[in-house]
Length: 192
Length: 192
DNA sequence: ACCCGCCTAGGACAATCGCCCTAAACGCAA
DNA sequence: TTGCGTTTAGGGCGATTGTCCTAGGCGGGT
Image (cartoon, rainbow over all chains, first blue to last red; front, side, top):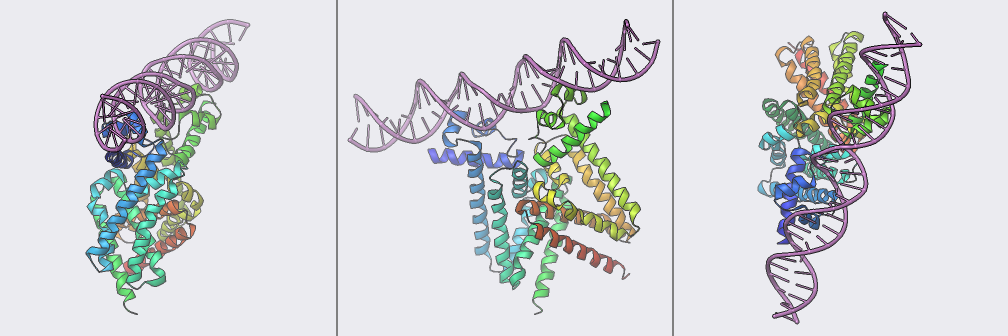
């Protein structure tokens, strides 16, 4: 089946791009991992940039789906934000090994001056606007986007250092710190 | 002069590794930028990893020198920490284009499973222990390293997002936020 | 039974990669 | 001047890169 093969390629490329980086992952790497020939590969994706587009779109869809799920499961926006913060722990092992999938891809594409860098950044935008929406519901109004960017940045920093030092203790203590920060913010906005 | 050529290679490689990444920068790239032949290049560095070692050591020396200068110029540890925070603004343009030199290199080497990843991480350690020392002088005692890691992580996150979104406003507002955080920490430790 | 279109395999392409070699030019000491 | 070690230039190695091409196999519609 055609679609199945295409999906398998994208899912495999997704993992390899994350673990090895986009530039360091070759056609041959992906074909070998999927278990197909390079010719078959070429039938589905003409250029390497095509695969990158596919992978980014795949990540966008997955992320959107995850955020939607969080939107349904609970009705407390604060809990949703806490779910976001706890990705760092849930995916802790991968993050310590390979860093944040979104941040590292965006950074690599920025260095390569790659046209898809803005597409990778739109992954950030997905989180950013979702977080901003949760803060709005908590009553932060015009400050919502600012707080969303703040927490997004904090997460990026934690992921970067947890990766550099392979430090799980640091990761967990920073997650706790971010949750405390969130509580403070909520407490202060409820005064008015 | 031999040393001069070697230095020129390292300085050029330093810039290229930062702007394009380690993997994406070839022998030919560096040789072309320096203006020498590949044969001459090979005389000074046998392998690409040798250049990486040279670049990392060069960065270590430069960083140590910068931190020493800050240690001499002022005698207020808080001001020194503020100097660190303000790197984000001083190097704002480069950071928005290429990210943090330390963080992006460490992240790339981690993905490549490169032996020099720990050496790149030692660049972080340089900042970490220096910051920790300043916090100690401010009286934070056992919490010093924790605070050093916290501020290091915050900086990394700010750099990552400022790069992804090419956002100077975010960068500056986060720097201000970090300085406010520092003031709060100092105020709270002085109570006792 | 036949054909046509999609899927797959695998080889070939020029270009580039990191790395290695040889030879000429250089500068300093005897 | 002669001689030797250092620095330089430039070609070439096998391997790998992204990309492209051709040929065979499979399956559904006529």
